[in-house]
Image 1: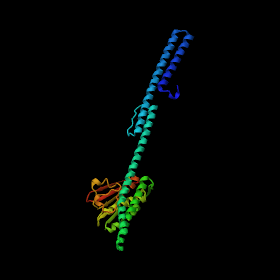
Image 2 (image 1 turned 90 degrees about the vertical axis):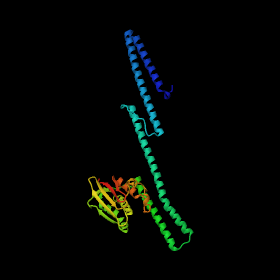
Image 3 (image 1 turned 120 degrees about the vertical axis):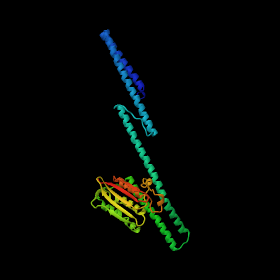
Image 4 (image 1 turned 90 degrees about the horizontal axis):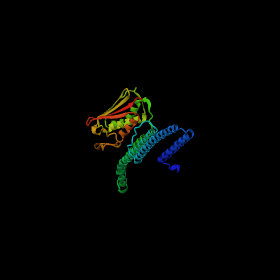
Length: 343
């Protein structure tokens, strides 16, 4: 018989035959040399006992092997079918249990990787869809302006107005691309935040410097209460970017002659930065959606923006171990709170 094709049943039968042959040969040898029937019977009983124990052990071993192979095949079938649930084995610590446990663990890792890859593909598709939706309007406007300039004669003053409109659309596209580049670099880990222990005052001052001109144009009063001695570990450049995005939103959605208040408090584990405006406020049902990428409320589409500032701000704060929350009500303004850990 070919050894490579030897089955478990054949191996057990061959082992039993060999053990029976050895027992018969031993009994025969004892009878020939001793000649005592009592000794022969004792040897026969002993051989029978050994044979029975060996048969029970082989049967037990065969059952364990068959059970393990069935579980192994079942687990592999689940893996091939892509099921999220796999058979669990509750058994004593044995060789079979250890092998099955590691196989199931391998399955868990493979399933997690599969889920992660699926999520990344979904995020990529959502990102592509968002980008295509956002660039559609400015590109259409640019095409329309370009076609008008090429096809219709018009005075120089009118041409200048069309070119200014075209420049505004180009600026919007450039702003969109820059925002998307920043977001993608943060999400993919291309840019790692450099957290250093440094004063928060300078970081906040850099963020405020970017919105003061627009605030003055709308006659918005900006008040700041930030102790100069507050020091914490943070990335100055990206934290300033996050705070600027929140402040920029506050300026956009606060009416003329409004107020924006910035206050900083040092707690035991976190530094809390509150940015409060006197704008129109946000309904509670929408407060969980404002941090989504490209989300904008229907009634504010006439306000300049693409709806990525708060999303980017939350990403930056979260990557530094902090979190954000908003407190608002329609007609009562909004308070965006940023919590950054000390360590």
